[in-house]
Length: 307
Image (cartoon, rainbow, N blue to C red; front, side, top):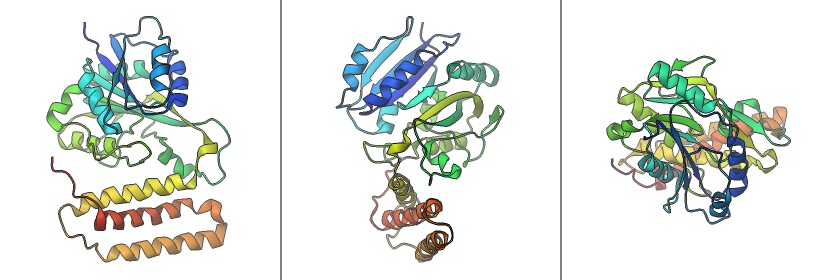
């Protein structure tokens, strides 16, 4: 009998994080319908293959490990979709701890709402001391997400699920395609946005997308490893990718107003620094990085692939 759900975890050179994730998954309550756990080894060159080979899986689990050599999270996710035997594919990341009721909560949503796609709550879990400059408003950039306190449809382009906790009916890919390989992390490249772009295609095609706060994932953060540069880099790449898409096949000469936006963003950093010190300036620094990336993407970014 084919499984109803394929839980897919994509991993690249994160054996230390993955070991904790797999250990915590032992507490996961199984759904009523058959399911499988599919791990996509995305070209790992660290201890991940050995870890997966020796791991003792809980009794009764249906586990498959697939190697995908083409680097990139979108490539790994697309391979997972191709390999999945379930009617629904459900994604999590390799640095997360799932609430024991996580998969059962999605099963309840599927039974009650018959969604085409869905997303769940992500809570940031600090494993050590949180940096003083990391304000609450920045936690969303570490994956924290709670769209609503109760089960509700997601209908707006700006209210997507996040990549660390979402799923969809596998058959939707026949209508809208797979994840854009130009987007998504590739090794140390933090370019993201692949799940947001996929979500917007779901909406454009008229598919039903639902949110449930009951399907909870905890995104583990080692605060000692956090650097301000991560947030700068993340926004630089966001700006770059947005500019590439906005410019399309048009002129590489950027609109003049972008330079004014960059200047105003830089001035805002300076004013905040003089008023409150550097622990409060990061959000405004991220705006500067975004506009720098936007200009770089408009001037020198590649032409977007045609679908």
